[in-house]
Image 1 (cartoon, rainbow, N blue to C red):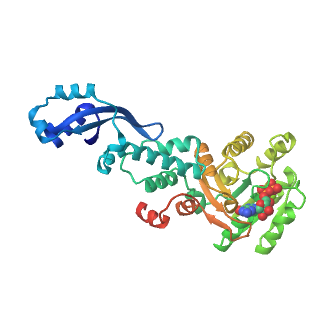
Image 2 (tube, rainbow, N blue to C red):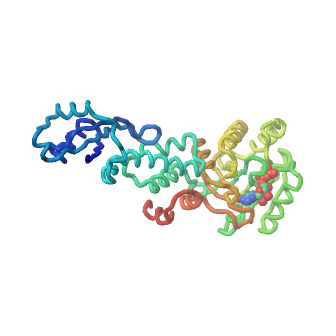
Image 3 (spheres, rainbow, N blue to C red):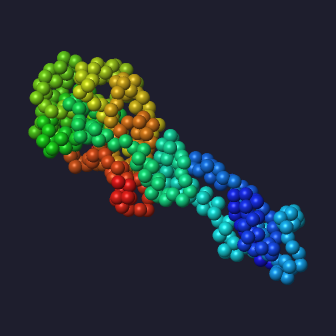
Length: 363
Ligand SMILES: Nc1nc2c(ncn2[C@@H]2O[C@H](COP(=O)(O)OP(=O)(O)OP(=O)(O)O)[C@@H](O)[C@H]2O)c(=O)[nH]1
Ligand SMILES: [Mg+2]
């Protein structure tokens, strides 16, 4: 017996198609109705898979079949034997599987990149059938990240580096100081970190190497004096100590020192290690917002040590802050890049295309 399978939106349409293709030789064997899509990825769609068998021309001529008859045959139908389907017939039934496969592949790539929370929903929302998965996914990921072009082109006079302990504040500050110096800016450094042993030695060694002044301050009067001494500088980069949210006294101290930098000429830059979990970084963010009420820009650090940039991208999307720099190593000043779409793409995994070619298509 020859079997055929037809997949359409509704039973009626599948029936019509069977009649159009095979005329009166067609007999309905069984039907299966199901939905595809849904979830985060696509709108739900109903599908009907019709399995039919074909009778010989002779038998067909003996028996003229109406739509009503087709339904009768269906009622009498036995369970289809899938092994009897030819490859061509199976192709018809593959369509729903392909759609599920596409969704699975998108989920796999997002998992690989540790992209979660609202960013994941945002990326998966409203995908249309027929889109190029790799291109659309990478496009959606990168277009969800805001690059801080404003900060890169017009940095505030005071740039205050804040972030979790060991997140790379001092190292990144040194890299950025060197970067500005090489483009002709007159840079000075103030360190508020009089707590960690060796902290000032660390930053002053870089400042000396780059030929720029550095001052350590430990109270509010010294902040005012240091600012006066730096009056002729274009840019003043300010290092801070890593803070434990539980250290109430130190938090208050830092808050007091930071209040002496004028709001409208100051930017707060938060260093975020790429390897930290999104939830932990969100906790840190809330803590800093509670203290200083402002974070202007994000710097992702330790990209060289991290499996993926996705936890950071998820964090950046959650807090809706732009990214100004990306640090990818301990080397000062070389292991630093200005944030850009291309740099973000370099750290995305699971895309089998040449990203530079994709960028070419997108821009
Ligand atoms: N692999 C790697 N290591 C980094 C990077 N940035 C900083 N580090 C290293 O991380 C460690 C801590 O860096 P610091 O710059 O001292 O971090 P911090 O935030 O100033 O630390 P505290 O002042 O103690 O809070 C040092 O060993 C740095 O060399 C980076 O992008 N990649
Ligand atoms: Mg430090």
